[in-house]
Amino acid sequence: MEHQQKPVSPEMTFPQHHHSDDEFKKRVRKTTILLSVITVIELGIGLTIYNIHKGPDPSHLLVLMFKGMVCILTLAKAYYIVSVFMHLGDEIRNMIMSVVVPLLLFIWFIAAFLWDGDSYKNLRNSYDKHFEEQKTEKKSSGGH
Amino acid sequence: MSSNETAQQVKWWNGGRSPFNLEYGKLMMWYFLMSDAFTFGAFLISYGTIRFSQNFWADPNVVFNAFPGAGHANLPLAFVSVMTFILIISSVTMVLAVHAGHKGDRNGVIKWMLWTILGGVAFLLCQAWEWHHLITGAHPVLAEGKIEMIGQTMGGNPWGRLVDPADAQHALAASSHETLVDLVHEYPKPGTNLAGLEKMDTQQLAGMVDLEHAHIRTKGPIAFGGYFFGITGFHGFHVFSGVIINIVMLIMTARGVFDRRGHYLMIEKAGLYWHFVDLVWVFVFLCFYLI
Image 1 (spheres, each protein chain N blue to C red):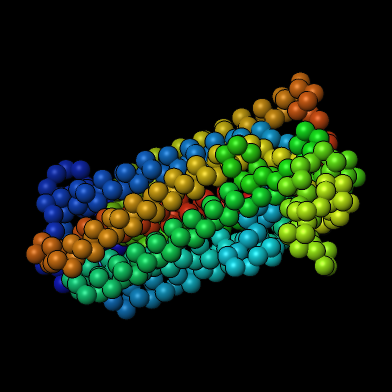
Image 2: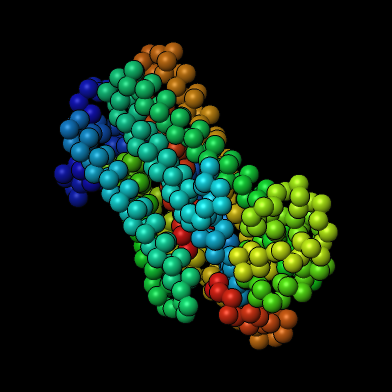
């Protein structure tokens, strides 16, 4: 930052780069619009899923595709919040990696635990007749 | 990596040069937020595990379709989008507060912190309304051969599969007088009022129930309530503590503490926490309301 002459703490040994006022305002405005637009698209997809469900024969593949799209859009939103609003994108690469690399654990975390839930369902559908009944009961009545 | 053009040549770890160039408290805030991300992640993933293990799950567009003051209008996603925008906007005002802090602009910080706190309080009020509506709003379910009116609680949810009206017809006779009054009152016939309905006997009431429109369901998976109230409650607690932190920061700013200190780093740290609260909401929004 231009106005800051001395480093604010002993851990900072060289001045940090800061954006100028105009540059900053442009960046914040752009990011705000981007986040809002992504949220509106997400809501649109949410309503699309709702209408597919209401229809006579909901296509599970289509619903799954829309849900995947929403997930990707959410990740984009998360990227902009962390990178621009939280200024992680402006930090030293070393520091960014020390936060981002541990988060890669989520890849395994999500995959393993959703797989586990799915496997539990399949096992119960195979061996627990009462549980299986819930699946077929009143199939005509919608939901998923 | 805009801070240094010769980054490739810099020997970051040879001493004499801070490898992260970040104040200690701010770095530790980042690591706290990373660990908090794993806490929230674990909650949401376990919700996903349970959901994947069920043959049926409540459709969020059916569960969250109410709007304050709109009565029984079916407005899926409307209220939660208001909550989402409140949080996004309060995140933006926080960015502006941090920027004002960089410039040492005390009045700017005070102004934007006030807006941020207002956004946080508005979000909490919205959440309070939503919880209250879910818990107290009774919906008809067919369970153990009779129809009853239940709300969304930790003990059960009224959003199972839709029941065939023919099946519900049999259950009417076994249902309580109170339930039947509620069911008839939901879609009242012309010329009836609540006091009049309460005087009728069960048989008369049973004949008046509009089963085609009553949307009677089975009970949904019990885990839904615990996960929803647990995770949105934990997030709401983060919002609440964020508001408290922001109020403390506002008071410290107003008293000139940061001006005397010569920097507004505390505002940056509070800002990181506040943005994280917004970040978590993005994922709560995804997991509970969108998919």
